[in-house]
Image 1 (cartoon, helix red, strand yellow):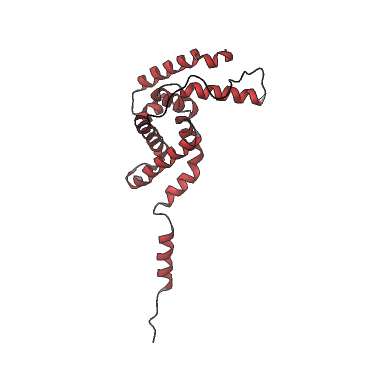
Image 2 (cartoon, rainbow, N blue to C red):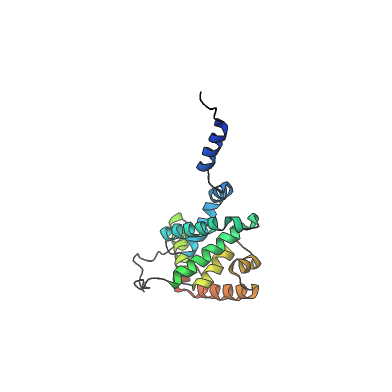
Length: 185
């Protein structure tokens, strides 16, 4: 005679092994990935590096998921992981990366309000932002592209509000003096 087996318990165990240990992590990533990718994109020089940076930061977040007490502050945690990871990458950068004087493509000259000119202005602005020092760039990105307040920016970067104000002011001064953005004035 065969022994009866509880099929509902075995089905539940099988279903539990197929799901992620943190279903809320998966839903968080699904909901916030476009915003977080935009942040990562603003911290790096190209989209591929941004995707890698975001994946690294999300992996760090996943590992620390149980230790994060306030899940309402996850964006700040991930942004901090993005900035810290990018800073670590910058410190370990390869020796074969060199800044060059000339860009491979000709500089766009906007003459009106058509989409191509707006894109050219957008590209010129990003090149100017990428020339800022890493710390100033991070502050400008968080402050103006992520639309965080000075206090929120200071919290994400773990610096004082005064540091954010002075660094952003210096960064904006550099952007105003950037020769590539001279045609906007």
